[in-house]
Image (cartoon, rainbow, N blue to C red; front, side, top):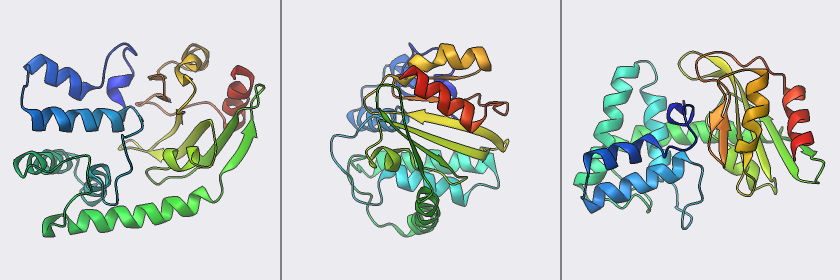
Length: 222
């Protein structure tokens, strides 16, 4: 739930903090951490990765193990450990492995549902004529797809996000520093956090903002 982005925008993702603290030198680990940090920060990867990427695989694992958060945690550790031990390049498509088939299938199902929701994306323009794409959905993913629609800013709203099933917003951009919105948003409700390219509403409590109110703030700010 983006926890490592909510305390200080000056800090890098938690995986980088941990790697630096432990002074890890293993190149395979460093490459994996670099990949995860790019995904975490919504940064563009060096090149397109054919399905299934490691991010796809990990998302699929979370769908499969969604009934038990402890099992989910250790399944994630096992998956990343396999990537290291098998010397798999995280910047390439993941190889076919029987134990990963259920993860890939779960991700494909979610992807189909998410893409159907994205057909209902609504578009707006800011004062500076920047294009906003807004979509309400309860599936995982969609930010990248909205930005590919020619949008400068993507907004995803979920009525039931995460383990606590709370209403939540995610705002992202490839070209605009959306973290400039944080002072404005935190005046409305505390707990917003993020980095230059991606921010999110409070992770532990339901957002009190309305879709119309949030979109109007962004229209005025940019």
